[in-house]
Image (tube, rainbow, N blue to C red; front, side, top):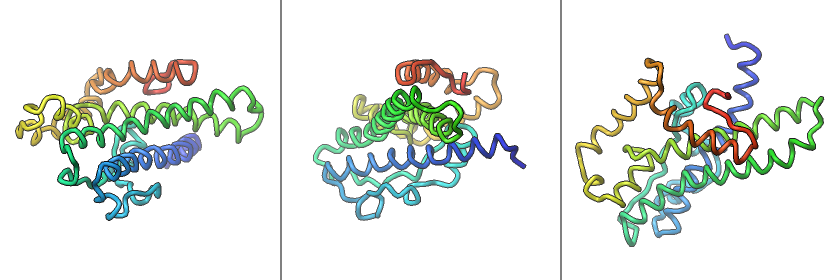
Length: 218
């Protein structure tokens, strides 16, 4: 059974997760739609309704491990004028949206924290949610930019280096490579993905919040 702190932490992070994943997937669908592909719109995914985007397993993982995923927005590159380029732009739209959301959370934190009454619980909760919004969206953005299929970074890599993008062995085994990297973080004293994400998170929180933070809050 969860302790009081765990329940409070869960209630704080759930709205942030819902918003962050929803904005990420909506950005993919919106970018695809603007480039001529109505697939996401026709599938009812061009929406900010989080229930349309959530993947149960991915959401549970992001709650407990801070690494997870939403249900991918359907995209049909056949509808693009320049399939490789436009698919890369659609892929880039998701992480970009997360970084913009991190900036918004950071700006709100800077505006609210000096004015928030120190003895008010609601003020403390709002500030904590804004901090979580910065952390989670930085992590989501740069995690998704890893150039391993099926992450967004792979489509960008495929556009920049077509030979790699057409390497079927890499495409086939990419998800296993990614799962292996995630698993290593649970069994090794050094987390490969954590090492990759740490400098982005440190710099991002320092710029947006005024103090650096790590993956575990330090």
